[in-house]
Length: 437
Ligand code: FAM
Image 1 (tube, protein in one colour):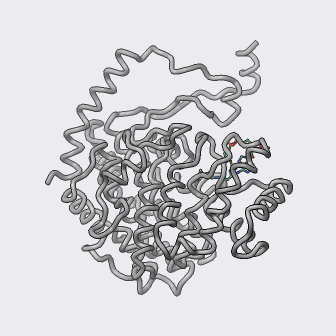
Image 2 (image 1 turned 30 degrees about the horizontal axis):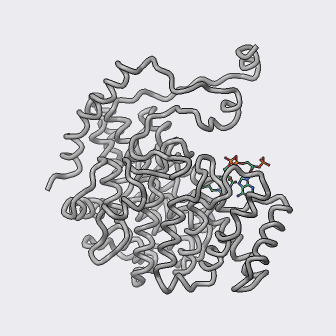
Image 3 (image 1 turned 45 degrees about the vertical axis):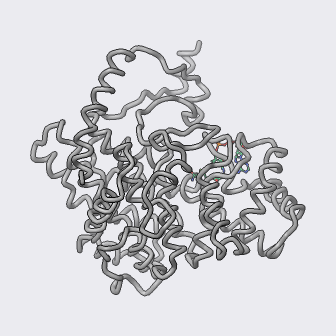
């Protein structure tokens, strides 16, 4: 069985040659003009960054190395007896562009799980934080503290050659993903239970999701474990321009190690316009349930949406900066909810489904948003809630364990391809006016 290192060692020269060819044959060609509106409008649509593991199409949604979500669900390994993609298999796939065999997946899973224990100093730091500190802030601190043992930082200091960068970048990235699951579990116990002193030790025969579920006290629910696998596979990557992915890439371009780069990204994921939206959706749905009861009519939901819009608030979980159709990640989570009897009949999940039937029509009539359809956050919280993970401020932490997988896959490629420090041009208003005169 070839390991992740051997597999990458084989692919990297091919991809390096492809980049060299792109630079030499097409380096002077243009990929489009940049308008003033784009510069002052959040950079929408500016083609700016190289990002291999996934590409987002506005109509169709995300493709990972060319595969749609249903194609990944068809082709990628699951846990024995399970139906959902293993995040470990997704990680291998995002790193290499190749579907791992069942044997490679097993070996890679064992390697990751064996890396998931935390250094004592990180446990101490996490356990000393105020329980009231936002879980995402705890996550930022925990991941940054892992930098103490960064192989990339140590080897850089010792004078490593540029051609070797990707190797310790890979080692640190594997550590960062594996340990993020354990950090996440520790934060949960610290914030919402009696602390992490008695946290279950890592079971090396199980996958990261099953260990995480056990450590936070939900290990007996096979449905929850499968949801965590699906959740962690779906949230991995959404091309490079979103705040968390871009931050990892930007900070990493200064040759900060994977821990510092991903810790910075988690700060961005904690923003309400990005990863925090999943907790907002649940707040919205529960508010609706409280006012309208468990089975409101479509007409009542329409009225509730209008009331929200007319009071100047957004409908959380709807709209997207790039997508213009329902998010296939939402579709996959909705399908999960509908196919399991326990979630299919859950009143909160049913509410999500009822909202999906009418909200796009109302948002279209409202006429503001460029995309009236649901994004990934529209369904995820209701499923976590069903299984008893009811602490909303924690939801973005589960997003964060997943996003590490995608963002750090590209981090490894950034080093393998020798990409330079990122430094785009900024302009003052006066400089813009001078240029457009
Ligand atoms: N409900 C009501 N109005 C909305 C809306 C929604 N769900 N989505 C967009 N709009 C409004 C938006 O506020 C803007 O109004 P103003 O002109 O008054 O500022 C107008 O429609 C045009 O916005 P847009 O161009 O369609 O969207 P943007 O690209 O500026 O922003 C989002 C994209 C996602 C921030 C926006 O759709 C939104 O606020 N959605 C609700 C929050 C949410 O679900 N965020 C999660 C995003 C998710 F994919 C993630 O990152 N995890």
